[in-house]
Length: 320
Image (tube, rainbow, N blue to C red):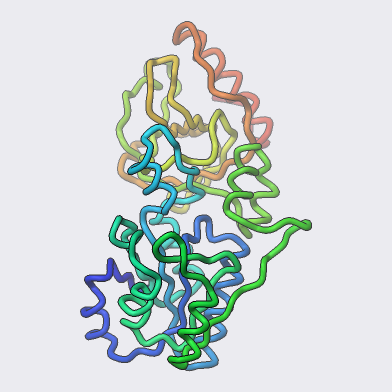
């Protein structure tokens, strides 16, 4: 998959792929759930029928993250299901040919929808454009599918909506999935995503406090955005081709004076140096909420109980 990093790289793209026929879509695609997959399937079907390639437009940061930052520092945007690197990986797995990264900033926010069409959509050779049932774009979200269809009719571009995807009678959406994850409903979240919920990140150096209580942990780098989970979990992990079980804590670590979210994973029966390697974490079941303990000894005792419970959940031998 070829990534176009920003509008300023369109000339380079067009010089490398002159007049390439494209079938596209646009959206946040957080989680790339069943509803998103339905959109991508339409795009791929259109590309097959029109002898074209597929392209997905997405913005970074999400609009809600941008508004929270510039308008009110105290308002937290919704947590992300997956960071943008994971989104690219999922688009690649869905056999999308091109991804178009658009930086969401004040210029894009205030761009009239007609200018968005002329400056961005018309800068490539679109033959079809597919949008979700609730898609809005441009200044004050004035642009909608009706405006796009009017433009498409005049420029021989097929513009179509996708119908709402329902699961168990309710709309599939990123908001619904976040709520299910926060409520520890991982089985339903998996059904809505079409795959298990995981988070992948690079193992980085932390404070090495786990070693002082004989429970070493792998600290996983987190993006600025929060994850839709909080607490202690039984987890299944993947390190390259190795499958490992463990417990994970997603939180600020109040016992040791932490104030920023950290994802720590203790892997069972494992003692290797894995700094700078990527670890994929699959959250199986929540064990408890994070809490502050009076001292490290009390924390260690609780973590040992968590390990025992996690091993029973994961059906692994109950040894340290």
